[in-house]
Length: 34
Image 1 (cartoon, rainbow, N blue to C red):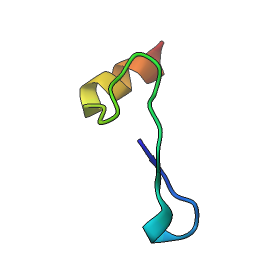
Image 2: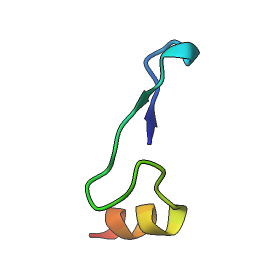
Image 3: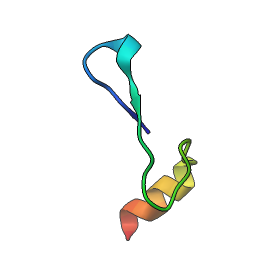
C-alpha cells in the first residue's frame, strides 16, 4: 500500500500485516473483513 505524504514524489510504501508489499485486491478485502 502506498501512503500519500502530500507530495507525489514522496510516497511511502507500507506493508499490511498478512499481505505482501503489493497486496492483491482480493487479499486486501479479506484482511479488512477480519
